[in-house]
Length: 248
Image 1: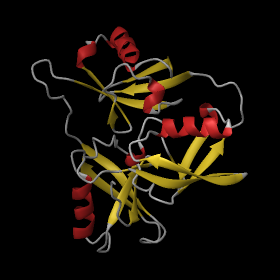
Image 2: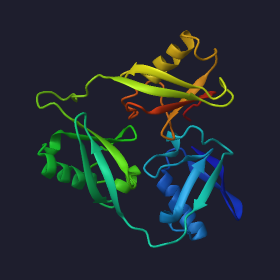
Image 3: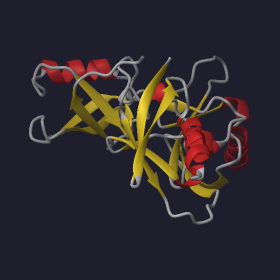
């Protein structure tokens, strides 16, 4: 299934067809063929939210038929592929310099050398998405300079992961049309789903009765998934907007 969107630049606009399962990176490659702008110098945004290379169009339900996608072109200077990242666990931070073109497997090998954790027990998450395919490059998952990766370990005796339940202090930020851009502090379990969070806010009258969707780090949050799955950490902000989104 495809839809028609508008790509807008500072010099003009053009229409193109995109598939719901098409990746952001594939769209950038098509723009490179059409306009001659290298992928490395492209940033795509919708309503101020950046579209990340490693995700599909269907990961952004706000992109629908007729949506305008802003193309921001960076000054064309020779890009560097070396970046600084942080790998976080519940007890430590590991700072690494990596090449965005190297594989997830290569990153796991570096963590193994530094920390001694068996590679087969490592699970890495970025922006709430598990980096499962070990032979995909880090850039395909959208990693950039100063990115933070969450690391967990698989249990040595069972297939489930050792993900501890914890309490999080988060800020729920409303838009200007809701409660005059209020900031609402909450202490909440990291296993709470977005559906449960929405019900909690409605039941406690913090939000008026209506439909809402939530955004964390420029990504729309999925109703049936937990805060942990989305990569929400202590002190993070969740942005709430009136309306609904749907996956085509």
